[in-house]
Image (cartoon, rainbow, N blue to C red; front, top):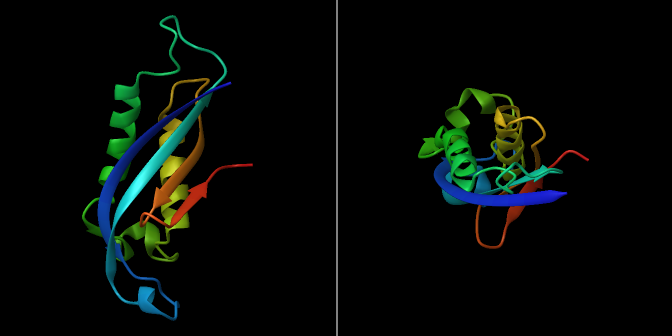
Length: 122
């Protein structure tokens, strides 16, 4: 099994509804996103997928979060825009756009250098 990792970032603001503490107030993050892909077989060039194509796909998916107030996005009308939920949404959007045989194994998002959440199906 092969695994590739690509990283990207976006900036966005949010607040957590129902939270008691500083995060109940509007605040922003420079989010770092890491997407891991898996594949059991290499193509004729000896690659899972061209890194340029993966980065372009991830950038396209996270572009809709960049410089947004996440609470105002339709996706977060009923759920909090937590790092966990952002990770899951990116995971669910990247997967269907991949070539056959390549899957997303995990998406991790950091809201700071010390705090991250990941989503994967297990």
